[in-house]
Each structure stands twice: as structure tokens, then as C-alpha cells.
Image (tube, rainbow, N blue to C red; front, side, top):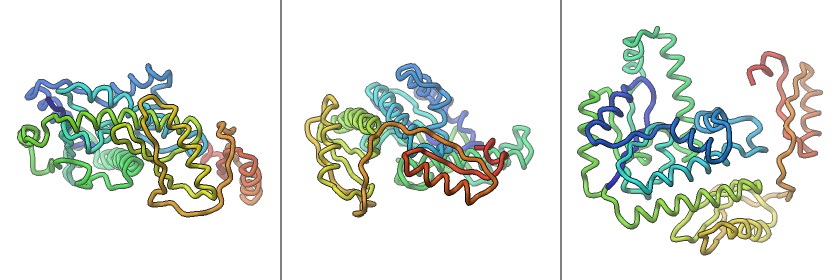
Length: 317
């Protein structure tokens, strides 16, 4: 049997679609909050941190802590455990964690134009101004998540098997359209799709092992063979490849490692460093030149810094 994933923006009657789809299919619903809770419990991390990784914005210190990359690997690992079961509706940001190779999950995008969404929000009692503010915040979160995972636009057709325009569909007709596509042969569970779930889980473990050592290399997996794509500039690629290979080989289930340059790779100076998490310093001073100079000096000593120039900015950050 197969499953369904729903990814959406806000004020498009997604709750009605989700609940009617569950009633029609008798599938159980798995939402962001469920996976957040599981990750928090399994990896002993606060739910607030998991939420921040899902919904953003990304911390200015993330390039030092790699917290988002670490938590994303946790999320992928937990979602992969659920993908071994069937008859599930994955709803929310977690829907985009399911790779296209897992073909027995019908990937659905629910979208609509802003004017229609504003009308729905106002029918729920919101003012137009409040509706627009909420939508902008939600859309920014959605766009940030899609860009982080795929470097793509949130409504790009390549991310979904079907896109349902909610301006042209009621929740009932949207459910009917989803069910019709769900019953197509392409969504049937097959051996290759089951293997893709196993590879997703293995990739997540390799990503986590790399992040723990301070590396954010792109990871691809096929039949236990791991391919690591290096997009950061390095001066000594063979040395880096050797290091990455040693880390990835420590993960159970890995049968082989290949390290290649990625699309964004270019040769530059690379300074190897100890990948312990450096201290994080927020500099607040209205003398901009002084603050920037101090920031540069601290960065040279592996202190993660961010600079703002007044108290209001500091409190907002």
C-alpha cells in the first residue's frame, strides 16, 4: 500500500482537505508537530529548536553550530522510519523531506493566489491587514524551507506529483482529485521505492555523522553506496576526500564511498580547522567601524560573531 503527502501555504482550507482525505482513505494523519515531538524525545533536543529548524529563519550563528543541518538529519531519519509503513497522510513541512525516489507516496501541493487566501482569512474573522501579515510570515517560512532543501521555488512542479489549485477546487473536489491520482499504478509500492526509503535513512545517518564533525557535504545513496558531493572550496581535495570517507565509513550499512565535486565547487584556499563548536558572540555598539573591526579579529580566532548597531536590533535578533 501507499501513502500521501500534503504540502501547502496557509488559508487554503488545508485542514478540511486533510481531514476529508483521511476520512475518505481511512489513513492516519502525521503532521509536523508529531515528528517534532518524536525528534525531541529520540534525540533529547528541545521542541523549540526543532521548530526553529523547520520554520526558520535560520540563526545567524548556524554556520558555526550547524544546528539546522543536524536537526534536518534527525527529521529525515524519523520520517524514514514511518515510510516503512503505509496508509499515512504526511502533512506540513515534513512532506518535503520525502525524496522523489520514494514513489509510493503521492506528493501533493496545495496552493492558491493571495487574493483568494485573503478572502478566506477575512471570512474567518481576520482583518485584511492581519491576514496579509500572517500570510507573508507563513510564505516566508515555506519559501525558506523549500530553498534550504531544494534551492527551488515552493510551487515548482518538480517538487510534486500533482498541484491542486484551491481557487478552482473545493475541499471535496480537491480530495476527489487526490484520490483519483492516488489510485494510479505509478503510486503503487514497488521494490525500488522501498529501497529508496532505506537509502533515505542511510543518507540521514551519514549526514548526521558528517555534521557532527563539522561538514555539510551533500549526500546521495544508492544500494548502500554513498556519494558525497563537495560544494565548498578547498585547496587539498584529496585530503578532504580522505577525511570525509573515513567519517562516512563509520556509519553502519555503508558499503562504499565516492567523493566528487559538486556543481558549486571551485578551487580556493581552504584552511583545515578543529571542528569543535566555537563560542558565539553578539556585538552591539553604535560605533560601527569599531564593532566591525572587533568582529573581524574575533572571527580570525574562530569566534562566531554577529554585529548589530543598536539595542533594538539586538533584542529583535
